[in-house]
Image 1 (cartoon, rainbow, N blue to C red):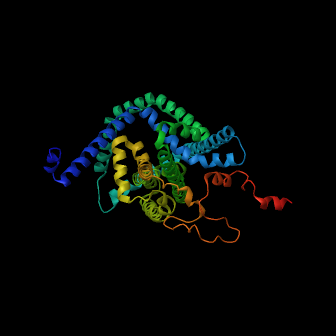
Image 2 (image 1 turned 45 degrees about the horizontal axis):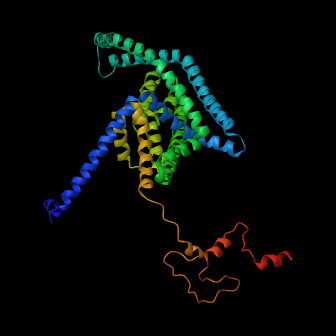
Image 3 (image 1 turned 120 degrees about the vertical axis):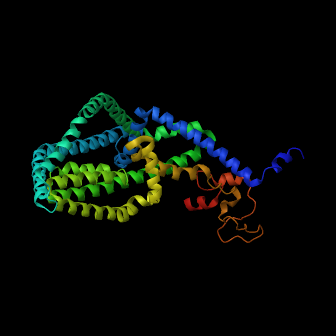
Length: 411
């Protein structure tokens, strides 16, 4: 009775709550220190995370080349060269258009500024020239005050350039070997889990499928979004339409926050180049297109793979942004989706195989036929079969030794 006395002093509900609280505290401590380790190893963790996303995007091409009979090393090299060619072509297009249209943008912004200045003087506000000049001088003073901070930021950015280059090299190496030897790396990784390796294997495959669907669907949706907005900007005659379309494409990988930032930049450029009317028209088209994307493209392409509520996406984005800034917001949703899909496979076991006696064709819960039942024509008896006979029945030859039917057929 003594061992039971302390447990009787605590209500069962309180004991369960205490157990859950202890488990949550332990999980929170593990997650906290894991986040500290990842933050400490950002130089390695971020390129590896981006490499996983790139591998999920490029693996269909590598797999198609392998199925066509190409060796893995050649298929991987062709995939990497195609990806680099696409990136180089996009960069050349953006750079050429930017260098060609930037002077035109400056001229149009100056014309728009003069038009706004004239409207402020002759319009309903009836401002004085001295007031406008004072406002302009205040803005110039603010920019000059921040010149030192801007220069320091540029210098620190130059110091970080080497780390960025090293991260890009690491990213390319990790992507190459994941495309080439991903299956072998995964098999080697599973050896560390012993008896629970089947669960880890199922969880990993479910996570990889979810990640692949998310990346491929997001790229498709972002490409449609950037193409539509690029056509709209080019049709309006807005300078730098190609760089803005690329900015919208990359910003679409960060749900909600990314398109808000890219849309604001594109709207401001349209306002400075073409005026208020064109800016309002572009903003209206952007909002309509974004709603179509959220309610049509995202559910059809990405929603089936994630099945996340918008509130969950906003919370995940907030946590990722607080922990790791823009990079954390970019990878927060796929990481949450992968964890959400992998946990059920880790908790549940696959149903056990039926016992050997059930291999005759009757399912679970269905009683076997009686031993004295009359077998059908051409059917073997359902009685007890010795183990040697059952082993003989499963021989590679496909028939029992001594079976006269095969001999009669050959004769």
